[in-house]
Image (cartoon, rainbow, N blue to C red):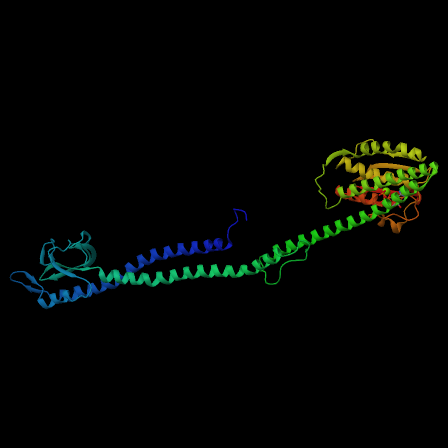
Length: 453
Ligand SMILES: Nc1ncnc2c1ncn2[C@@H]1O[C@H](COP(=O)(O)OP(=O)(O)OP(=O)(O)O)[C@@H](O)[C@H]1O
Ligand SMILES: [Mg+2]
């Protein structure tokens, strides 16, 4: 597996857990703030009640201006189960008249207010303080009650754990669900992998099944598509090898028969004749092997990396036609060439285009009787055309498609080709994005093979 590939499970988990964790920390922060505010609100209200009831019990001696909290009232301050409660009375100048001497001072912003809350410290402990204005005998005093924070932090913590625990549970649950869910969804893929790895290399039948997840189906379809194409190519190749072997077996058998005849014969003239036949047979076999190689080279499934360069089609065709003049002369055939003065450019591979034209001229010269006419033409009417026209026997219209098939020869034409020439022509034409077709020559006589690029 390439180093870059990442587990689906890990990827999904990080996609899910990251937002959940961010949400979780956001909730924790919010809850901390909200829990504190809530417990303050609840216990501040109780402080107000306490301060009100204490203020009503303060005893005042007008003669001495003395303020005293009766012992029964002081008892209330001791009665809290969790927190220590402190009490003090100050005059408006801030002097403590009665109660706890270490009571933190009145907050600066209290002036003008009836009641306020503040924070402070007594005996090294944090306290919440209520400051309450208390009018008495035309004068104002300030009652202060301070309470440690035990109850408040207990309520706040309870509130937080009530929310944080379920949240953590959700995260753990989500992790488990993703972990096992993915494991379960991957089971069919694991089964598929096992089935594919246990398969014979010859088995190219489609893989997969209904239980494959829908998201993976396109991949499976693409793989099956590839398998189908592969199996088609293998079929074509197998057929080609079988055909080629069959085609080679017949001339080899002929060769052997001729050799045996030459060995048996005592007459030197007949032996010489047999050896000459042998040479002709070997020539034909050489051509057959060359044609097979050309076909394999230009097979649609073969490596298509051929060198495409801009070529002057007229120039190329006239050079190749010139090479064929001696062969045509041997058969008293008039080999002509027609092309416009202007260059006609095609993008192609010169060696393959030569193969194509060689095969067309070879057919025309081979199948046209002596004293016939063969013309190679190049012209452009929107698309570049290459034609080879002869006035030979022609090809019946119902055979004009079949002659492009491999190893197909029209019976009765006498010449002993292997039936590969036109198949090669068609493959090369297609490689160049073109098409090859067969018509009659002018006035319905002979054959014209055209290649359109
Ligand atoms: N110009 C033509 N005139 C008449 N018949 C033709 C002509 N060209 C091709 N044919 C017919 O089409 C058949 C197929 O041609 P093709 O070139 O594919 O094979 P071949 O010539 O028999 O063998 P190869 O070219 O491989 O040696 C030939 O056998 C022949 O009968
Ligand atoms: Mg041929």
